[in-house]
Length: 432
Image (cartoon, rainbow, N blue to C red; front, side, top):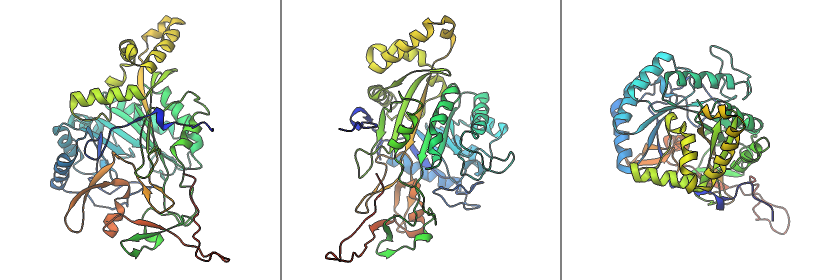
């Protein structure tokens, strides 16, 4: 029997669900200062929502869903004129404000003001297909060359102090080769980089064997916002990324996941948690460690953990010394740590940090046209339909109800075959 790259039976299924989740997604604006290939949202100038509308959405979230943090996204939220007031509003509700940004509009002065307002963390989206060209020219730089820009933002946040720092990157067929080195880069800066997230590219392309419908109306392919006129590889899966990472990090071991709505063994959000220093990873924390962390946090805070503070993540040594009796993966990491310190006692002065690596696998098309989404997705956002009904919906597909009033359905294309079976249906499928 072929060995699985990642065995779902050995992972903890994250307990996030529609009503009780680590994250909820808020979009105060659709305006952005980049037009990234692969983006799920139209760039709409002067699309800023009034603060009263934002507060109403936050009220609706509270009525529908427990959350640990609010991901403030867009568009780019740093272009929102009331961003400081918005951060303060989220903070006043006992939630962690996380700003998802490309970073272009971030200055030291704005960062300082956002910290005073209560910002908990930043997630910077940086990859080689964003068309960056302002200031220092990043156009044409590959993923590794962009580490200079990543480090710039990580250091800026670290200098301000006590703010979580994460990075997102969309991964394409021609950039997945860089993922292992990005994982290694994150380790070298484990003291100031808390999380690395890799989002596998999804788009609608001419070679997909499906027609798209809003109700019974067939939708013209190139009217759909997230489409490409060229054939693209759109079926990368989380297992592919893990396989690539293990070429340079053979011990890399995920611990938890969210499954697909149509496939229980799909890794829609695949979480790996590691513990170490800038020059040595002592181990990968296992499914039981994540379960323990989620359970204890929920017992204490009545919600599931999403982002942890840099102060908490720097307590790796305490985790090793205090939790080893309760968890096998901590014991293994402690043994490696003791060997590391034993060969040079001065290493005991170094802080030990925890760091997360997340791989996100968006919508997948099933053979019958069903769309497998993230079950318990954290990036759920607000939508009011044409009848005035307020709903929680997937943010990555919000353009569909905005344009067509509902999410699009996919129907397999029919192909006539000459021969004895003239009505036979042939479907070309992605490998997942």
